[in-house]
Amino acid sequence: MTGFNTVHLLGVSANGRRGSTTRLVVASLAVVSVIVGAAFYWNRPSAKGVVASNELFHTIERGAFLHDVVERGQVESASNVEVKSEVRSYRTTNSFEILWAIDEGAPVKKGDLLIRLDSSALEEEQTLQQMDVTQSIASLSKAENELAAAQIAMNEYVLGTFMEELNEIESEITLAEENVRRAEEYLLYSGRLAAKGYVTSLQLQGDQFALKKAKIELEKSQTKKKVLQEYTKEKKIKELDSNIKVAEADLEAAKERLELENKMLQFFEDQIAACEIRAPQNGQVVYANVSSGRDSSDFVLEPGAKVRERQTLVRLPDYEAMQIVCDVNESRIALIEKGMPATIKLDAYDNLELMGEVIRVNEYPTPGNWMSSSVKKYAVTVKVLNPTMQIKPGMTSQVSIHVESSADVVQAPVQAVYEHDGSHFCILRDASGMVQARRVEIGSNNSRFVVISKGLQPGDQVAMNPRGFLDSVDLPAAVSPAEKIAQRFEEVNAREKSTATTSVTSSAAADVEKIANKYDRDGDGALNAAEIGAEATTDNAAPKESKKKPTQDQVADAETSAAATQEHAAQPERQRPAGGGQ
Image 1 (tube, rainbow, N blue to C red):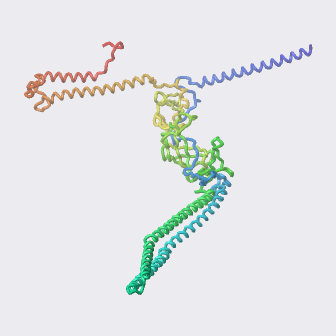
Image 2 (image 1 turned 30 degrees about the vertical axis):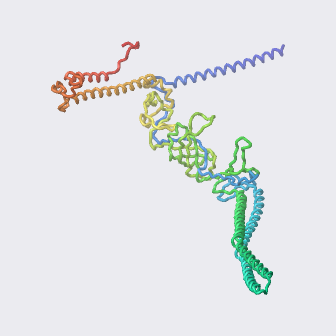
């Protein structure tokens, strides 16, 4: 029993403490609520036009006003030279391996070595090409010798062999002529002896045959000479000339072949030299790494990487021509013009402030993507006027473009200006604590302060929360959108009626002037009784009513009708009944 009572008493004591704690918390919350409610009650506007003294107010001052358009941008170089691989593909070699590369970020001067590519395959090709050049030189020498031999052969035949053969044939002709002369003398002598009976007829026939043979030998030699001069010589000269031309063609081919081989050798030498990529200008090395998320397109510049022809490897930005490119919202792009000054702050250096100048404002918005919003942005380029070596391409910066600045103007916080029915108001508090709404005319604003051109003076106190005093001040009654549209329609109708009245009045006056000019014979500008009553004396074939001039009453009626028409057009148009009755 004792143990049971002890436990029971302890349990009651614990429950009692928990209940007391809960009641204490509830009571504390109730007290706090009462205090807050009382403070709100005593600090609210106690009556119309009166406000407690502890509300947030701002004292109007006159001072310098600066309107900046602040945007974030990225640093880039205006003169960014891309260094590419100039080593061309050859035969089965499409890429070259990087053997050595300078460290990224290293400053370099013009001519410094940046990258060295593997040129072993090109050196092997150069060796083989050198052998081809040597063979081409030997072929050229052979062709030159063959041409010289062909020219010598021509001279040898024309000046030597031909003359030798010609002299030999002429010698044969001379001998044959001598044999003919002797045969003729022998035959003459034999004929005399035969007549005397000293020589037999057989001997006489023998001498005759000898003469005939001598003549045949002479003709043969003469024909041989003719063939030599007219046929053999021309044939041989043609053959030798053909040999000369062939030798000349072979020589030209050998020269061209040697030239091509030398060009190819020079090509390999240039490609080997291009394997050492050097800086075209001063700058700082920036690797042209590519990371597209696809293994086939990624490229990291490092030893062992493969380089293709015309691939960009290094970029050398010119640090003396740095610029910032930032995108400006379309709502503020109209404020920015070329030549405006700017202040640049880099995220990487808190204490570094650079001066800039707007050099270009794009006419067309920056292309977006499917993830971007529908708000258009325009690229603005700001030139850095005092660049330093601390600037690196790709750095993020904050650009403040100085759109407008005034040395001494009245300005108020933007939250202190309340717009009502197309006008702007400020809630002012006087020395007695009374508040009132005052119409103000505003100028430029810089998202913190707005220039007050009329309505406020230095020293005026304006409420920072004007909406909290709308129940305590009197504002002009707002015109509803329907009333504004009705007023607009009335202005349009009035303008149209005025235009119609002017048109009708001009038409009536023109008719009256036409009648007066037709019957005013004396040209005094008025119609008298004689001019009105007279009959027309010309055009007898026309109908009677067309011959007569109008009477004075008719003219008066025309003038009265024109005046009535003018008065009717000037009156406002009456509204017809809704039912459409006349």
